[in-house]
Length: 313
Ligand SMILES: [Zn+2]
Image (cartoon, rainbow, N blue to C red):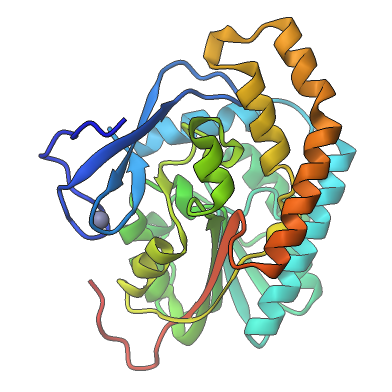
């Protein structure tokens, strides 16, 4: 599909009006009703939902999985390994001080950072997750939108966004606020799914990490970098930690086999389940390859707020 889209809309990154519809998809994970359109900017490559849902709608789409009951032991163990790795990454990129985690969820990452000597603060929209995080961390967890909390300027040594930016309908406001609350020289760590990767291009609307309609912006390494640099940050390093999201190919294959939306049939589901071991093997091969190559399913950037702050959009 390369249909020219409504030319009154503009790209959130470069303000171009050269937008092209690239795919449409449904909520494959939790079945929210509707078909969601994704456009790509011809000039900078940024992709986003169009029309852009309201923040409250996105929150509603995210509440479904949160309210879906307790997570499995395997999921918790995996999350524990991932969050310990993130805390080690934080320690490797900033001397311990005060860290702000936006979209802190149940506080697992912050608990790991606290263990390593950080003074931790979390911000989270979900009431349920907020309660859990506050209990785990003993306070310092705020419920709400970062910009509305009016935290003191220049009060954090580091800020982290782990798979949060892609859910945010107003990324400029968030990045501007993060720049304000960070100390000069403070580190911003952002990680998102990398939609420039070959698996996304192969599966498109069936791609597991597309996660419509909860994801509203679809970054690749270049557009993520441009978005962050546009708010006065200097990018210090970029990498692609592919090993801790190993399910991309296997689950995308499952979606492809299941077919779209209501077209799921029992035999298709059974087929996709039976095919899982094979796809896991393919996935392992892919992950091994991405360890050697430049592309993975995740993009991670460390950016520094310069001591002389200028160049804010
Ligand atoms: Zn653009």
